Length: 93
Image 1 (tube, rainbow, N blue to C red):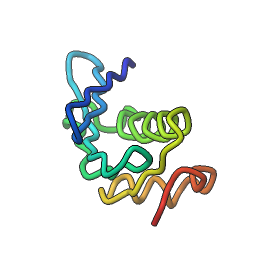
Image 2 (cartoon, rainbow, N blue to C red):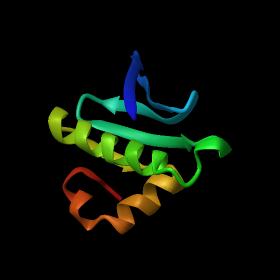
Image 3 (cartoon, rainbow, N blue to C red):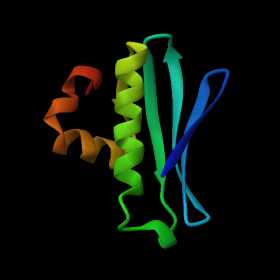
């Protein structure tokens, strides 16, 4: 599964495409060191295929590489952070 990053000014999106369908996780950059993940969408055709999990893990990997923190405003991302205590180094409650 390929995950692309799109960023325009203070808004961004991670997009995962699989089998011709695209899931997305959107975020806002509130500072150079902080993003707010505000929305995750996975179309019905991709449910149960790990797309949402892959997007969340990608966001964490990008935060580690970029040296920033994530505020998980999105309920899906918040639930993923709760399930992955190893992500605490890049997340803020």
